[in-house]
Image 1: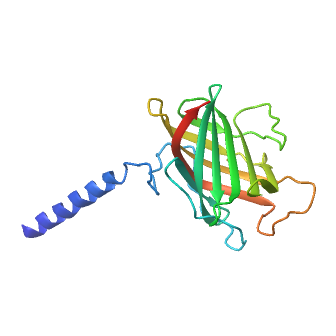
Image 2: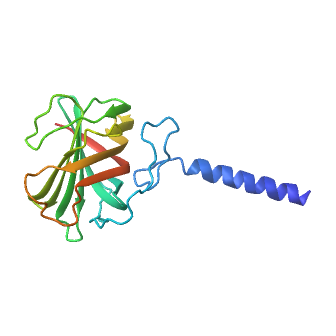
Image 3: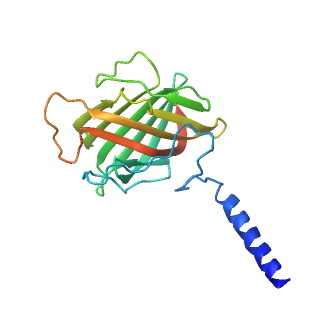
Length: 208
């Protein structure tokens, strides 16, 4: 009898912990992926390349993270609603708080759904929305520019939830960029191809 009570107690505790973990708060570092998500979980394929990834982030205005090639990099998210289109700006900073990486996702309606990303060039010319752009920076100086790799079909963003009352948005993303400048790369830590995957962001958006 005591054995059955013990097993039942373990089951109840496990059940409670499982569902308590599903409440993805503003600082949740491992939110649950919906079963019907269009963003498929990916494993690291390149464990050799050396890149720069950043740990500094501030979750007060919003936050994000992704596996950058083979290392987790953290972002602060700044999200805007401009002429009924959402612009998600994910920014990494180094230990001295200087801007390093900037990943921009732009052109989403204020609604939940899965979106395939399109190409944007470094002059911000685009025909189809939504689009994505990535650059590596030294504060206000762009080190290397990257454009979306259009040969891939898994460049996607999923808007998981939108609270239009409190203006809070949550989403996932995966996208690949290729080096875009007509010159050698300025940083040896910037690869020809940069993949961000298992990405997540959450934050409050402002109406411009």
